[in-house]
Figure 1 (cartoon, protein in one colour):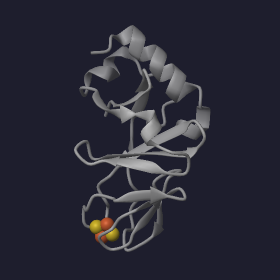
Figure 2: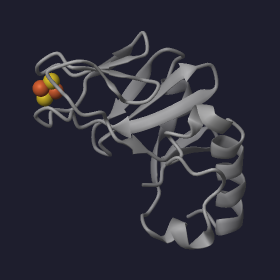
Figure 3: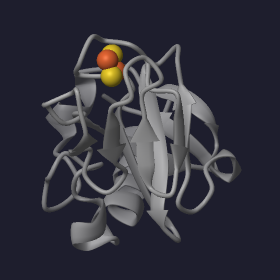
Length: 138
Ligand code: FES
């Protein structure tokens, strides 16, 4: 479990330092969350940051999240549940998140639809880095 002081430092380092570049992954907040916000969900350890290459990503099926690195050192996360018919997205290459079911593609920058049949973007999720590991916090 991460205490609030440690968590606040990590969120400031990952979500605050990247400024606009990580705003989608940080829920669009301008700064670290207030103490009351962290009680909503239990953090989930996903895996090492080395699993997510630049311009690529990794799908964590159990947690239903895809983590991407559209630019060196900039990590973003989105739901891995496709907005078309709820398949899990399958891969990330060239900063595009692809769904294997019907061919939809989403931007790794903001989750927006690049290619249908999906018409709605992937929702952003909040992921931080703690000790070289991704932690999903909502
Ligand atoms: S469920 Fe993803 S494209 Fe249809």
